[in-house]
Length: 141
Image (cartoon, one colour):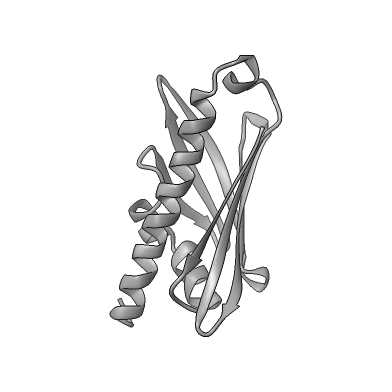
């Protein structure tokens, strides 16, 4: 399954990327079950709690492309990325894409898993827009 969501942002692309890639504030906009920490320049590790399981993932920052890329160590069939692009007039756009190439609940007839994923993407992008708005309103914070 593939999921993608797009959201306009109230700031230029570089500002939005700086907010989105700031590991110290990711907990403000990512789903609450994801916890991220820096492990090296441009590289972060994440724990994602899904029900009774915890998955470990890696996230790579690609600043020259205004892009984040990630995956889960034990699930090479799952990957994702976030891309920021300019939209003109001091605004930008963020696209988040998730790929689940293995067996997914949705593939076996459950539409709920897909709905939950879509809602989670939309909520995360809404919270990211709020965080960007705060950064623009309070430069330096």
